[in-house]
Amino acid sequence: MEKILFLAHTDTNGNLPKIALETLNAALQITQGLAGSTLTVGLVGENVQAAADQIAACGATKILGVSGADFGMSRYATDVKAAEAIGIAAGATLIIVPGTSRFSRAIPGAAFRLKATIDTHVSGIQFTEGVLQVQRWYYRQRMMATLTRAARPWILVVDSGVFQPWQGAKGSAKVEVVAATITDKEKRTKVTGVEAPSADAQTIRPDAPILLVAGAGWTKKQADGQIHAKKAETLILGFLKNAKASLGSSKSLVDQGSEGEQVLTCMSHLNQVGQTGSTPRHPKGLSTCCHGEEPHVVGWRFINERRAINTDANCGWAQGKADVLYVADAFAVMAKVNELLA
Amino acid sequence: MTTAFHIVVCGSLVPDPLQTLEPIQGPTGPALKNEMMLPSVLDPWAGHSLFEAANLAKQHPGSKVTLISLGPKAKLQQLMMIIAQKVPFELVCLDGSASGFMDSREVAVALAGAIEKIPGLDKTKLLVFGGCSSASRDAGTTMQMIAEQLGVNDVFLAADELKVQPGGSFRILERIEGGQYQVSTCAGAPAVIGWATGNLPEPPNNPQVGMTNMRTIMPALQKAQPAALKTDAIKFASVELPKQQRQTRIVKDTPVEEIAQEIVTWIKG
Image 1: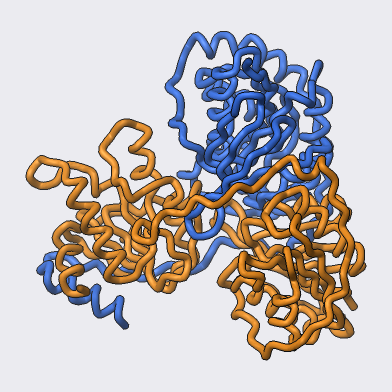
Image 2: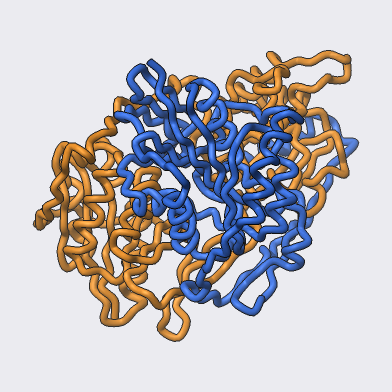
């Protein structure tokens, strides 16, 4: 029997982000799977009422909230304080948290203060003989572990895209206010804004149906002995627009900028997929001009259907890493694909 | 007026990403097959943070960089042979497991304890750098737990840029969702920063830097204190390699038009 706390923060509009609703679903599954357990909701934000109303029908026994201007921003010191206060107020033994950038930064600190154990990047749950076990990857998606912990409190930070978002009717929720006093020492950091690329330049789209990955081959000499970086960029951006795709990159391509080679201006380290980049979740992925080396391909762990275009029939993608490998010139194929999609 | 920092970088070794890894059951829990024989590299994100630290120290005279590494002493010695020529630093070595299966809290306690023991540490000048997560455990939790033990309230994760302003405050960019950056200002040190890739290339080898570094690295390795890490916090039911091996269909000697049409049908399907 566990006292389960679902802990989330609001987004800039005061609502719960999609990943929070997914994690709420996980928390509900855990509550149902561990007989006799209770669920409490904890919310952090400038104003948490709208978020509480959004999930009023989720079946939680109570909703706790830390709110105020200091909690409207993503700042470590104030987020840790809020999470700690709610954790103590709830007396939780299991705390289920969405893996947003904000809470991924703050919750490990709160775990330390609450003397809790913590597992992040949770990508699955199961119950074995009444015991909760979680799944997470080690060595950057190269091996998967199923594990449990006896110590409590136990905090689970859940990855996005693992669970379906919770759906339910809005209601009128009663939020119990939890006090968290902030001192000047905790306000040394000020969030001044967000740097976002313009809508046209926004190439990272987590909800896109397909991921296009560009490899270093795009900026290498082509059959005519010349480099065609501009043309490559036009083809890539054309595909992103036509297929509403998200753009990923191999490390070698984004590293070229710092090595003084020709670069694609639409690409930065933020696009990097793989061992030292991201591991996005998309239903489909198309790799172009990338050899499919293992450090890159580990970033494809959560791409369901994979296809690749490469001039080398023996590249890494052919070794059971892609469903289909097209041995062809990506410049020619992508130009035709764009034409057909337009 | 320039601001001098003491930048402590937490970074250790991970298996070379090109190596094939296989989990085995060891006496105290899961481990990697032939772990001690596997070639190692400096954990990539920690490596970026080391290069950022060196760059920051160079811009702010009077600053110094200390690298704290927790790992098997013999393997750390091999690693130092590779990275000593990159940037100037002093080494503090903790002899213990660098396994990804260790609990991050145990690691954080050991690292924070070692930071506290650095002779002459001035916390008002302290910046603790490290990777935003390791390439082994990939938890992204150690830096925050170090901050908590050191009493540091300002923590940043997945940082790509830090610019020190006149007076010692700094502006920092952290990666957030959707390819965006959160921009923050911080009043100044002390702070803990978990770096993503940053913006700097890997520095070329500099034998002179290597010679200077080795004067302190070898004694540090000899003085390495054993890190008593407990291994009972996590109960692993299994650790497995992913089973999925795809049956790759290779399409070659096919007209571009046909390939393009097939891809479009697949995308729309």
